Length: 152
Image 1 (cartoon, rainbow, N blue to C red):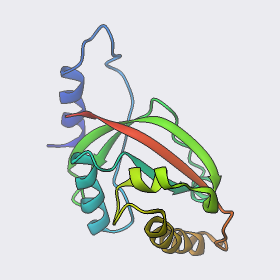
Image 2 (cartoon, helix red, strand yellow):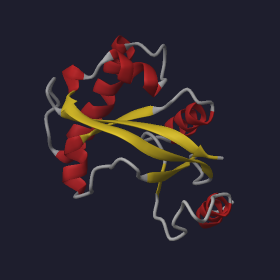
Image 3 (cartoon, rainbow, N blue to C red):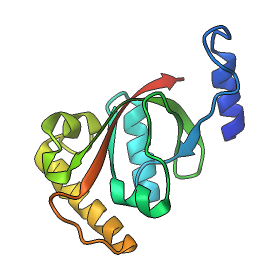
């Protein structure tokens, strides 16, 4: 099913009194590899992954706006196929070294510990920093986002 058709299926399932059918969304996949897109997308579908983290410097470098509470996103697999729709429920920005156990657990990756989160995200954010000409450090700004799956 194509992205527009998936979005229309979501709209058709809503109470028209409560939802604006002209609503907007972003369509994207998690991570930077096809494997990550599929693995992390599957965790969302299973209800395990309810949070994600992003490098603030990457938003600034790309001149993209930060996610906001209430944003809707269509999550895609590695082939660009829609998996689900999530709604952003919370945003917090802080230094890498202040990300807590709750965030690590809610991201649902690996063994869900903060130690695992720090290891894999340090590697991920270091690569991102290198690509935008920044040096990773313990206080690099991280955007922690919580969300809920709202469709299907």
